Image 1 (cartoon, rainbow, N blue to C red):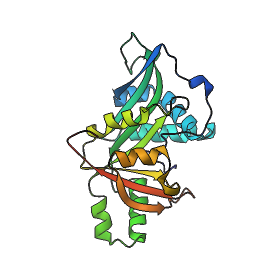
Image 2: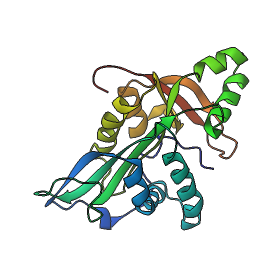
Image 3: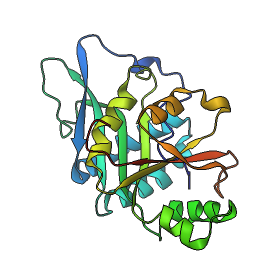
Image 4: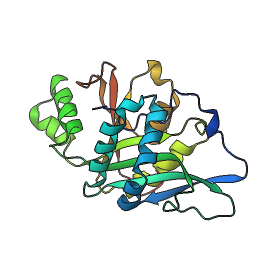
Length: 222
């Protein structure tokens, strides 16, 4: 299990083949669970490239993403690179996916909930306080932009589309800690209104420290 939720706006791999074509447009579209499953191999491959994970991770990640898409309330947004005169259509498999973001309602049975609950208790919160923090939230599980397309505001556009469509009062995510929050992901999350829930938390499956962030639902702009 990889604990990253909403942490992969920016990858680590060079990808010269992903450089944008000036004759195409990148559009942001809602993605249904059905089309998500049709394109799941492409989506998971994008995730692995953005995160710098090797191909050995593909089967596990594919299985997890498929399971996530079956959760009631699953909500996804995709960035498509398509010919400028053509309307963006996630069902058109010739239109290249260059970004993906999705979330779903958190539940006490999920691995992420249990891990964060453990962290809250270890930080000194009571059982009731930890349960209240995680009482009614959507987990922003994944946010990824293909290397070569990063630095163009696609991550923000994905979240601007996704966050208002989530149903619960709070959106939560985890992202790796960096000194002084000095990277684009942290800057974006702060700009979007995400505040601290837990800092320097270690998931059981990852040696890196993570920040757990939350953002209240708003009626206006993300």
